[in-house]
Length: 394
Image (tube, helix red, strand yellow):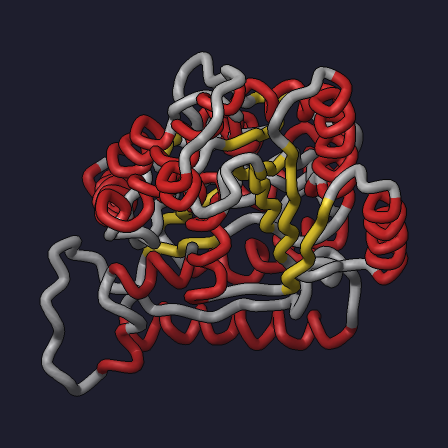
């Protein structure tokens, strides 16, 4: 999302010095220090000597931009509730904060305030090093607590946004969704499909294709999805339902032990014919787009401690894909009011219930409309620019 912001505001101005400035309707110049400390998700928050050297270099680079280009606003993405990551933020504020007029924090992770409640000394020092914070940008109401923890003078909610991954939704994706739903509803009524109806629904309307796309780890809900699907299939078989669930998993495993456990469980349910599971590995570009377009439901029952926004849910809505998601962090705020696909964390039985509810519901157009109304890149950049400009106006 930081890369999306920098590109949307015209790119890193340092790389364009001496060239004619490009048109930037938002009136914001970015001088970007790419402060990437970790190479993998598992590496985030771990203490390593190399990270300290990188930190010092990043801070010196930021201070150099302050004096070389006259940059007075310091934009920073704070840490989640991890001790080593918090120590990093302390050093950043200690080294950089005195040189800048305004501090803008963008809370992409969540849970810091909740975590600091258990560590009063860390909390006091955090508040002292961060203050004053001129603006905190949060992703939803849930993040208000993190921003308030450091006594932010102003707090703005700005939804994340992405380039439309499915601009041809009405022509290429919606007709298939409609055809598959109509076929499923007919099957549930006990009616037979003719050959043209079956072909228009992709040839296998009796299969409900469920997609899980995220880092493959327990905290993201991977095993809950699998167990929920096994439970649902068992119920449907017992009730003589004509439908069956099939799971597609896309993403990289973070821990070797969990990867081995997952494949053992997949082999077991496959041998029992309880479910079919396809593992795609990491996907991007057209492979990722194809996974979303070919699925009938997206399942993301995360309870990851630093989960804040759940951008994959926004991607699923862009494809008009019904979503099963947990009541966790900001996720309920992304979906329409009284959405029927919300479940509690660590609840495979509720996942099975939700998959059954959504199998016959027509949600494609309403979810696509939610994406267009709230989560487009253009709306995100406009709202983000408005929030940042409010610092100087105040």
